[in-house]
Length: 183
Image (spheres, rainbow, N blue to C red):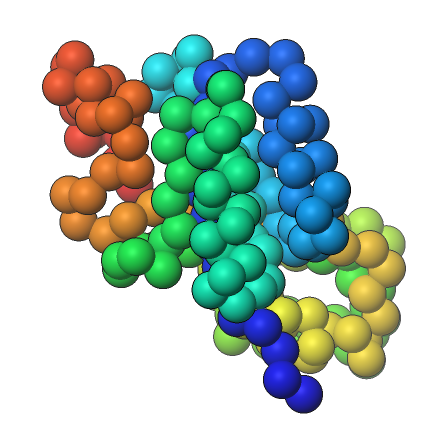
C-alpha cells in the first residue's frame, strides 16, 4: 500500500468564535481528511494553537498552506516537517480483565510506561502518552484482551530547542514568561 506522507501542521489563530469551524471547513471543502485535531489557548489568551495531522503529497501541503494563509484569523501556519520537533498524543483506553488476563494487562501497561487511572470490577482505564506509533502498538496488544472504549486527544507538537512557532509566543516569552513551567 502506497500511503501518502503524514504532515503535522500547527496554525496560530486569533482566539475567536468560529475560527476552528472555518479551518476545518477549508480542509473538508477541498476533500482532505484531518486525521487528528488539537486546539487550545497559547500563552497569549487572544491566540489559539490548532495542531492537526493530514496526509498528502507536497502539492497538497502547499495548497493547504496557501489557503490557510488567506484566512483572516490565521496568524501563522507551520508544517513541522520544516525542523526537528517533539510530537505526543494522550490516549485513555478502557479494558476488560479477569483473573486470567489481569497480569497480562498490567504487564502491557508497564512495558509502555502507561498507568492505570481507574479500576472497577473487571474493567480498568489506562492512560498513555507518546508518539502515535507507540499508542497504536499498545492498542494492538490490548485489543485481544478486550478493549471496550478508546479516547484519543490528537497530536500536540513543539519544535525542539529554542525555536518557537510564532510571534505571539515569542512576545509572551519576551514579556516575562519564564521557563519554569517547562516539564
